[in-house]
Image 1 (cartoon, helix red, strand yellow):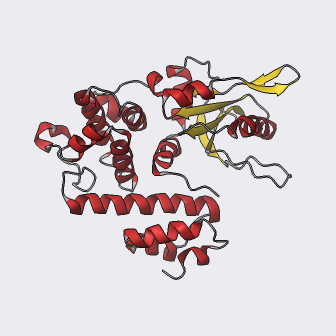
Image 2 (image 1 turned 90 degrees about the vertical axis):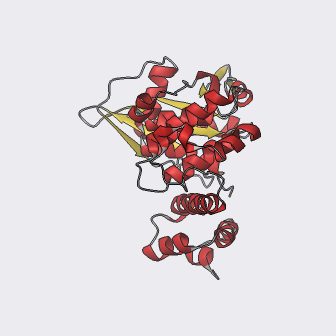
Length: 298
């Protein structure tokens, strides 16, 4: 079992928190027609059938009409690098979901860079003259969001903008995008601001990252209310606290995906663990068969 990276987890968290983002990207960014829908829900990402091989997509979003009928299924894949195995699993994801929901389905790939995007756009030869093609969204097609009000109206899209454009050569622009995104999520009362902050910083090139981590909040007054451990200002305490919270949030998601809802005791262990203990838990997660094995002997 491969363990998702923090960048991968942060990207998927945007769709978990606001699943309608998938439909909005298809319609408003990629210009793809989306059928009328009334509600949006996240569906199980397990796309296996009765065969023993497991096919688990990153995220599945379903659009339903007013009568509760599903009108479109969207498989969301966060792709950080070229992985030729996906040429075989992606068509399975789409076909199995289509058989389950009995309506049109598309596979939306969120590519980390243009090289990955260009690779993912290639039609997949299925044999017999048939092809499968994913819908791909690379960084160049994701809107640049620097306006504070626009970011607050759609915090998830603002964070996506910061993740996509962190390596732009214009440092001032990158910092405006990043701070607008962080301002948009500062009132989320959970682990997401810390997770997003770390992921946004990681998406930047080294020079801009260092400026971001040591920036003077007086230069960015609209983020002045952000808790210091969500915006690193060069203080070791803030960096370490945010790093620990982000690691605990990532492990929580991974454990839930594998073992289901966590008991309060497990949540408490994660919340109180040090960064070293969290690293040990993550290592045991690779081979553990039960939740008890994951937390022993911590």
